[in-house]
Image 1 (cartoon, rainbow, N blue to C red):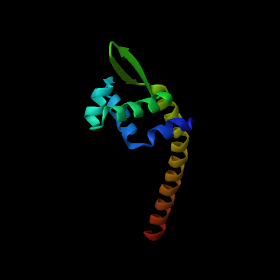
Image 2 (image 1 turned 90 degrees about the vertical axis):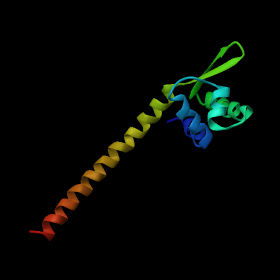
Image 3 (image 1 turned 60 degrees about the vertical axis):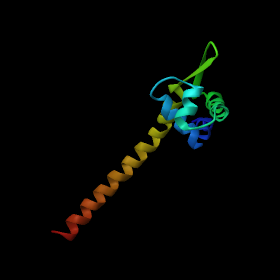
Length: 107
């Protein structure tokens, strides 16, 4: 798991940018408007997201259009999957234990 991804997503504005880009590509200005940020702030966050590999930019005349890159998110999902298995096993054991308690308290 790449900790750069987690570090980039730890900042609330950057996480909101990822949420916005999930719906489709946007310009810096559109992102700034939707999040009520100044354009330099939005650009700073997008630079960090770009360096982390979470977004990519396409230049169209004088506009910079950003889109989400799924690869880092897929990698993060794969990493989280290893924890899901562990928790499912624990919940299963808890369920078995609760069934056992119910049977022993209510014959």
